[in-house]
Image (tube, rainbow, N blue to C red; front, side):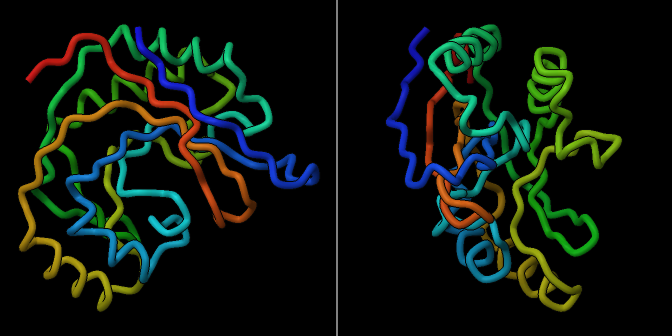
Length: 190
């Protein structure tokens, strides 16, 4: 298993409530969604949050991330084979346009494995009853989402295959996030 650990940056000691997230980055979608994320979302590429599918947010407080946690995550994700997926369709939550990955099952399995490993950390703080893998495109009113949907549909389909990323908030209020570790899957499959 090859877990790539990246540096740790602590800017001020009072930043003890910083968060972390486990995501699968989808750089192939950046050209289609980054402009919309920048215009409409607090979690956006310029703050260190690239186009992605969330596996678990919020994860542990950033101050709790250490080599042992990264190693434990590396072992967990190494149990899963890599997988390819496509972004073919747009869908909506209230006030959010997103791309739905197909197949969605690998994302659901990964999130459920994290829920077993970290039962005290439900996805989105337990706010939702179901797991809906998605790549956020835009947030806003119906008119804005209709415009974003017309724009992004021209870029579909988008294909991808990725690793899990541990993101760490380094400035509060979604101001700045950094990659803390890259966590590869086991055998890659096409």
